[in-house]
Image 1: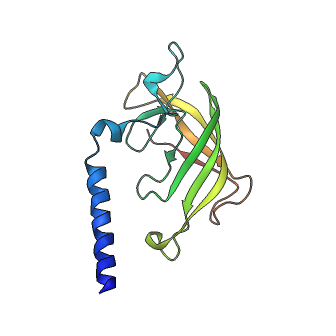
Image 2: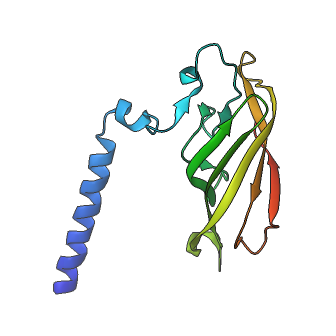
Amino acid sequence: MHIRALTTTIALFAAATLATAAGTPTEARSAPAPAAQTAQAAPQGVDVPVLVDCLWHPEVRPVDFMLACGDGNSRLASLHWSRWGTDSARAEGVNWVNDCKPYCAAGRFHAYPVTVTLDHPRPWKKRPQLSHYSRITLVYPDGRPEQFSRTVSYPLWD
């Protein structure tokens, strides 16, 4: 009988949590993180490239960035930007990567310190008045996911 009461309590708590999240006003859910800036918040007169996120939003100096938009198995977090210029940007942070063992849904996330470089600015096809960084390079100074090289580069979406 105690198991049934515990299961019911957990189910009710989960439902209340989801209801609270679903009832959050849209403005609160869509507001960017305080440390992140949208492209419109860039200093006036300075034409700096943006970083395009998974939802096609332009960002400048984001604190977090999803690398694996399709499945969420790799993301950057706690990004501290030391440079955001017209040619490149550089940050230190953490890459959270799912080991997908034995498969991704059952895998565990591991944190790896990483240096992030953005470069190759190009006009953004969706908004040609903005340029966006078209390549990201990750350098792992210590440990790294077993399938990764110490330095990896990826093209960024346009």
